[in-house]
Length: 302
Image (tube, rainbow, N blue to C red; front, side, top):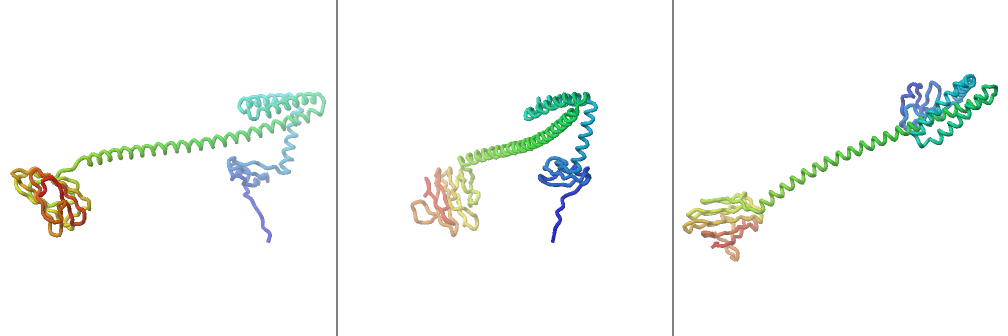
Protein backbone atom coordinates (compact mmCIF):
# COMPACT_ATOMS: atom_id res chain seq x y z
CA UNK A 1 0.00 0.00 0.00
CA UNK A 2 1.50 3.37 -1.03
CA UNK A 3 1.90 6.21 1.47
CA UNK A 4 2.01 9.97 1.03
CA UNK A 5 4.61 12.11 2.87
CA UNK A 6 3.39 15.62 3.62
CA UNK A 7 5.16 18.53 5.33
CA UNK A 8 3.65 21.45 7.21
CA UNK A 9 1.99 23.93 4.83
CA UNK A 10 1.31 27.60 5.62
CA UNK A 11 0.69 30.85 3.77
CA UNK A 12 3.72 33.15 3.32
CA UNK A 13 2.57 35.48 6.16
CA UNK A 14 2.45 32.56 8.59
CA UNK A 15 5.79 31.08 7.47
CA UNK A 16 7.48 34.49 7.85
CA UNK A 17 6.63 34.46 11.57
CA UNK A 18 7.39 30.76 12.15
CA UNK A 19 10.71 29.56 13.63
CA UNK A 20 10.92 25.86 12.79
CA UNK A 21 13.18 23.27 14.40
CA UNK A 22 16.68 22.81 12.98
CA UNK A 23 16.36 20.90 9.68
CA UNK A 24 12.54 21.15 9.63
CA UNK A 25 10.92 21.66 6.17
CA UNK A 26 7.78 23.83 5.83
CA UNK A 27 5.98 24.50 2.52
CA UNK A 28 5.03 28.14 1.81
CA UNK A 29 1.76 27.72 -0.15
CA UNK A 30 1.39 31.31 -1.38
CA UNK A 31 4.36 30.98 -3.79
CA UNK A 32 4.76 27.16 -3.54
CA UNK A 33 8.23 27.59 -1.99
CA UNK A 34 10.10 25.11 0.22
CA UNK A 35 11.58 26.67 3.38
CA UNK A 36 14.28 24.96 5.46
CA UNK A 37 14.46 26.05 9.11
CA UNK A 38 17.45 26.43 11.42
CA UNK A 39 15.76 26.60 14.82
CA UNK A 40 16.63 30.31 15.23
CA UNK A 41 15.61 32.23 12.06
CA UNK A 42 11.94 33.19 11.66
CA UNK A 43 10.73 32.23 8.20
CA UNK A 44 13.64 29.81 7.67
CA UNK A 45 15.73 29.77 4.45
CA UNK A 46 13.68 29.86 1.23
CA UNK A 47 14.43 27.34 -1.52
CA UNK A 48 13.76 28.48 -5.12
CA UNK A 49 11.30 27.02 -7.64
CA UNK A 50 11.32 27.24 -11.42
CA UNK A 51 8.57 29.88 -11.45
CA UNK A 52 10.27 31.79 -8.62
CA UNK A 53 13.58 31.83 -10.54
CA UNK A 54 11.77 32.93 -13.69
CA UNK A 55 10.02 35.74 -11.84
CA UNK A 56 13.27 36.75 -10.17
CA UNK A 57 15.05 36.73 -13.54
CA UNK A 58 12.36 39.01 -15.01
CA UNK A 59 12.78 41.34 -12.06
CA UNK A 60 16.56 41.33 -12.56
CA UNK A 61 16.09 42.02 -16.26
CA UNK A 62 13.74 44.92 -15.51
CA UNK A 63 16.18 46.44 -13.03
CA UNK A 64 19.11 45.94 -15.37
CA UNK A 65 17.20 47.55 -18.24
CA UNK A 66 16.37 50.46 -15.96
CA UNK A 67 20.04 50.71 -15.08
CA UNK A 68 20.87 50.79 -18.80
CA UNK A 69 18.40 53.59 -19.50
CA UNK A 70 19.46 55.65 -16.49
CA UNK A 71 23.14 54.88 -16.15
CA UNK A 72 23.74 57.89 -13.95
CA UNK A 73 21.27 56.45 -11.41
CA UNK A 74 23.07 53.09 -11.57
CA UNK A 75 26.36 54.94 -10.99
CA UNK A 76 24.91 56.63 -7.88
CA UNK A 77 23.57 53.30 -6.57
CA UNK A 78 26.89 51.54 -7.10
CA UNK A 79 28.68 54.40 -5.33
CA UNK A 80 26.23 53.99 -2.42
CA UNK A 81 27.00 50.26 -2.31
CA UNK A 82 30.66 51.13 -2.19
CA UNK A 83 30.00 53.40 0.83
CA UNK A 84 28.08 50.62 2.57
CA UNK A 85 30.90 48.19 1.81
CA UNK A 86 33.45 50.65 3.19
CA UNK A 87 31.47 50.90 6.47
CA UNK A 88 31.20 47.15 6.62
CA UNK A 89 34.99 46.86 6.14
CA UNK A 90 35.42 48.87 9.36
CA UNK A 91 33.02 46.66 11.42
CA UNK A 92 33.28 43.19 9.87
CA UNK A 93 36.89 42.21 9.14
CA UNK A 94 35.85 38.68 8.26
CA UNK A 95 34.17 39.81 4.97
CA UNK A 96 36.47 42.70 4.03
CA UNK A 97 38.09 40.88 1.10
CA UNK A 98 34.72 39.83 -0.33
CA UNK A 99 33.36 43.38 0.01
CA UNK A 100 36.42 44.92 -1.71
CA UNK A 101 36.17 42.42 -4.55
CA UNK A 102 32.49 43.19 -5.01
CA UNK A 103 33.23 46.91 -5.09
CA UNK A 104 35.89 46.42 -7.73
CA UNK A 105 33.49 44.43 -9.86
CA UNK A 106 30.72 46.96 -9.33
CA UNK A 107 33.06 49.85 -10.27
CA UNK A 108 34.14 48.01 -13.40
CA UNK A 109 30.50 47.38 -14.27
CA UNK A 110 29.81 51.08 -13.82
CA UNK A 111 32.52 52.00 -16.35
CA UNK A 112 31.26 49.41 -18.83
CA UNK A 113 27.66 50.51 -18.27
CA UNK A 114 28.66 54.09 -19.06
CA UNK A 115 30.27 52.89 -22.28
CA UNK A 116 27.17 50.86 -23.11
CA UNK A 117 25.03 53.94 -22.56
CA UNK A 118 26.96 55.55 -25.38
CA UNK A 119 25.88 52.71 -27.71
CA UNK A 120 27.23 49.35 -26.57
CA UNK A 121 25.11 46.34 -25.50
CA UNK A 122 28.05 45.17 -23.32
CA UNK A 123 27.01 47.72 -20.67
CA UNK A 124 23.76 45.80 -20.12
CA UNK A 125 25.60 42.60 -19.20
CA UNK A 126 27.96 44.37 -16.77
CA UNK A 127 25.12 46.34 -15.19
CA UNK A 128 23.30 43.03 -14.59
CA UNK A 129 26.48 41.57 -13.08
CA UNK A 130 26.75 44.60 -10.77
CA UNK A 131 23.17 44.02 -9.63
CA UNK A 132 23.88 40.34 -8.90
CA UNK A 133 27.04 41.25 -6.93
CA UNK A 134 25.09 43.74 -4.82
CA UNK A 135 22.44 41.06 -4.12
CA UNK A 136 25.18 38.64 -2.97
CA UNK A 137 26.50 41.29 -0.56
CA UNK A 138 23.04 41.81 0.96
CA UNK A 139 22.66 38.01 1.36
CA UNK A 140 26.09 37.73 3.05
CA UNK A 141 25.33 40.59 5.41
CA UNK A 142 21.97 39.04 6.40
CA UNK A 143 23.68 35.72 7.14
CA UNK A 144 26.35 37.47 9.20
CA UNK A 145 23.73 39.40 11.18
CA UNK A 146 21.97 36.13 11.98
CA UNK A 147 25.27 34.57 13.07
CA UNK A 148 26.09 37.58 15.26
CA UNK A 149 22.64 37.44 16.88
CA UNK A 150 23.08 33.70 17.55
CA UNK A 151 26.49 34.30 19.18
CA UNK A 152 25.04 37.17 21.21
CA UNK A 153 22.15 35.01 22.46
CA UNK A 154 24.58 32.21 23.35
CA UNK A 155 26.85 34.63 25.22
CA UNK A 156 23.86 36.07 27.11
CA UNK A 157 22.73 32.58 28.10
CA UNK A 158 26.26 31.75 29.30
CA UNK A 159 26.34 34.99 31.33
CA UNK A 160 22.98 34.20 32.91
CA UNK A 161 24.17 30.70 33.83
CA UNK A 162 27.40 32.05 35.31
CA UNK A 163 25.49 34.71 37.26
CA UNK A 164 23.11 32.10 38.67
CA UNK A 165 26.08 29.89 39.64
CA UNK A 166 27.71 32.89 41.35
CA UNK A 167 24.54 33.65 43.33
CA UNK A 168 24.25 29.98 44.34
CA UNK A 169 27.89 29.94 45.42
CA UNK A 170 27.35 33.10 47.50
CA UNK A 171 24.29 31.54 49.15
CA UNK A 172 26.19 28.29 49.81
CA UNK A 173 29.09 30.27 51.31
CA UNK A 174 26.68 32.20 53.54
CA UNK A 175 25.01 28.97 54.67
CA UNK A 176 28.39 27.33 55.29
CA UNK A 177 29.61 30.37 57.21
CA UNK A 178 26.48 30.35 59.39
CA UNK A 179 26.95 26.62 60.05
CA UNK A 180 30.60 27.25 60.92
CA UNK A 181 29.65 29.98 63.39
CA UNK A 182 27.02 27.73 64.98
CA UNK A 183 29.56 24.91 65.24
CA UNK A 184 32.03 27.29 66.89
CA UNK A 185 29.42 28.34 69.44
CA UNK A 186 28.47 24.72 70.09
CA UNK A 187 32.14 23.77 70.50
CA UNK A 188 32.68 26.62 72.94
CA UNK A 189 29.62 25.57 74.95
CA UNK A 190 30.70 21.92 74.95
CA UNK A 191 34.25 22.85 75.90
CA UNK A 192 32.98 24.99 78.75
CA UNK A 193 30.71 22.16 79.92
CA UNK A 194 33.60 19.69 79.75
CA UNK A 195 35.70 21.87 82.02
CA UNK A 196 33.07 22.13 84.76
CA UNK A 197 31.19 19.63 86.91
CA UNK A 198 27.73 21.03 87.75
CA UNK A 199 26.81 21.16 91.44
CA UNK A 200 23.73 19.83 93.22
CA UNK A 201 23.87 21.16 96.80
CA UNK A 202 22.13 19.01 99.43
CA UNK A 203 21.67 19.22 103.22
CA UNK A 204 19.15 16.44 103.91
CA UNK A 205 18.41 12.84 102.92
CA UNK A 206 18.36 12.56 99.08
CA UNK A 207 17.70 9.93 96.37
CA UNK A 208 19.67 10.12 93.12
CA UNK A 209 17.80 11.03 89.90
CA UNK A 210 18.80 10.71 86.27
CA UNK A 211 19.71 14.40 85.98
CA UNK A 212 22.46 13.92 88.60
CA UNK A 213 24.62 12.14 86.02
CA UNK A 214 27.88 14.06 85.57
CA UNK A 215 27.26 16.31 88.61
CA UNK A 216 28.72 16.53 92.11
CA UNK A 217 26.59 16.44 95.26
CA UNK A 218 27.82 19.05 97.74
CA UNK A 219 27.10 18.67 101.47
CA UNK A 220 27.71 21.28 104.21
CA UNK A 221 25.23 20.23 106.93
CA UNK A 222 26.11 19.41 110.52
CA UNK A 223 24.08 16.17 110.86
CA UNK A 224 24.38 12.73 109.31
CA UNK A 225 22.35 12.28 106.07
CA UNK A 226 21.63 9.41 103.67
CA UNK A 227 22.21 9.39 99.93
CA UNK A 228 20.12 6.62 98.32
CA UNK A 229 20.92 4.87 95.05
CA UNK A 230 17.55 3.89 93.46
CA UNK A 231 16.72 0.74 91.53
CA UNK A 232 16.94 1.16 87.73
CA UNK A 233 13.15 0.94 87.32
CA UNK A 234 12.84 4.11 89.42
CA UNK A 235 15.69 6.10 87.87
CA UNK A 236 17.47 5.24 84.62
CA UNK A 237 21.25 5.58 84.49
CA UNK A 238 23.46 4.56 81.57
CA UNK A 239 26.45 2.37 82.20
CA UNK A 240 29.41 4.66 82.83
CA UNK A 241 27.31 7.30 84.62
CA UNK A 242 29.59 9.11 87.07
CA UNK A 243 28.46 11.09 90.12
CA UNK A 244 30.79 12.77 92.63
CA UNK A 245 30.17 13.34 96.34
CA UNK A 246 31.91 16.21 98.18
CA UNK A 247 31.44 16.43 101.96
CA UNK A 248 32.27 19.63 103.86
CA UNK A 249 30.05 18.73 106.77
CA UNK A 250 30.66 20.01 110.27
CA UNK A 251 30.60 18.24 113.65
CA UNK A 252 31.97 15.08 112.02
CA UNK A 253 28.69 14.50 110.20
CA UNK A 254 28.77 11.71 107.57
CA UNK A 255 27.07 11.24 104.20
CA UNK A 256 25.98 7.59 104.12
CA UNK A 257 25.69 6.26 100.55
CA UNK A 258 23.01 3.54 100.71
CA UNK A 259 22.03 1.26 97.79
CA UNK A 260 18.29 0.49 97.77
CA UNK A 261 16.96 -3.06 97.65
CA UNK A 262 18.05 -4.79 94.46
CA UNK A 263 21.05 -2.47 93.98
CA UNK A 264 24.64 -3.44 94.82
CA UNK A 265 27.52 -1.09 95.55
CA UNK A 266 31.14 -2.14 96.02
CA UNK A 267 33.97 -0.16 97.54
CA UNK A 268 36.96 -0.36 95.21
CA UNK A 269 39.15 -3.28 96.31
CA UNK A 270 36.33 -4.89 98.33
CA UNK A 271 34.02 -7.69 97.20
CA UNK A 272 31.26 -6.96 99.70
CA UNK A 273 28.28 -4.87 98.70
CA UNK A 274 27.32 -2.49 101.51
CA UNK A 275 26.55 1.09 102.45
CA UNK A 276 29.58 3.39 102.76
CA UNK A 277 30.23 6.62 104.68
CA UNK A 278 31.83 9.68 103.16
CA UNK A 279 33.35 11.41 106.20
CA UNK A 280 33.88 15.13 106.84
CA UNK A 281 35.94 16.69 104.04
CA UNK A 282 35.84 13.37 102.23
CA UNK A 283 35.44 13.08 98.46
CA UNK A 284 34.04 10.04 96.61
CA UNK A 285 33.19 9.03 93.06
CA UNK A 286 30.24 6.77 92.14
CA UNK A 287 30.13 5.01 88.76
CA UNK A 288 27.51 2.59 87.40
CA UNK A 289 29.24 -0.38 85.74
CA UNK A 290 26.11 -2.47 85.04
CA UNK A 291 22.37 -2.22 85.62
CA UNK A 292 21.83 -1.74 89.38
CA UNK A 293 25.56 -2.24 90.00
CA UNK A 294 27.79 0.61 91.24
CA UNK A 295 31.38 1.12 92.38
CA UNK A 296 32.53 3.77 94.88
CA UNK A 297 36.00 5.02 95.69
CA UNK A 298 37.70 8.10 97.07
CA UNK A 299 39.32 9.75 100.07
CA UNK A 300 37.47 9.59 103.39
CA UNK A 301 35.27 6.67 102.20
CA UNK A 302 34.79 3.94 104.84
